[in-house]
Image 1 (cartoon, rainbow, N blue to C red):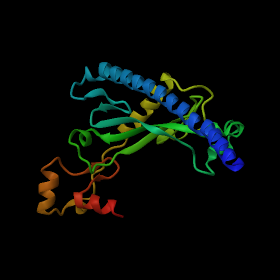
Image 2: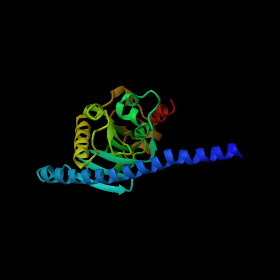
Image 3: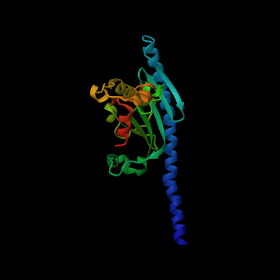
Image 4: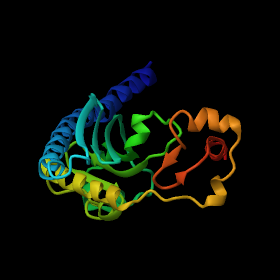
Length: 233
């Protein structure tokens, strides 16, 4: 009986140290995601006003798709902002554990996650399910609403340590601007002619007639059979 009571108390203790902690981080991430949506919407409005009035052919549009997702379309690119509903910790041996900030309180390493993906706008428009997107960055928020960013280009090092202050709209806007610049600077690469010159009738009927070649910015385009083959590797 004493052992059962001891285990029960341990469960209560772990619920307090883990479950309640994760719920707090989840609420923080929801709050930050709402600010992120606001920042992205404002950025879209500015871009629309300052650029698309000069060139209406370049579409800039923000859309709040649902609770955990929003998107910014700018010309042929789509920036997808999404929030994961779960809370994570870093793998054992991660550099984050060497920081004095985490050493002082190990619970500060638990984080909620906001993702920034880049897709071709046509991938979304034509629902090309085989198309590939790229993770441009992910924003990690802990129980103190302090954050780090892992990502491409400048986003790979500017915010690699936990911030000294809570994340805010100004910082989020800066992150989105850098993400957009990375998207613009990454061109769609035309694949070698020999790699796409052969096509059978089934591929023509099922792939080309629907919406074109399955496409991703980092890979150019592939025939459907090639995409399936890659997925099976």
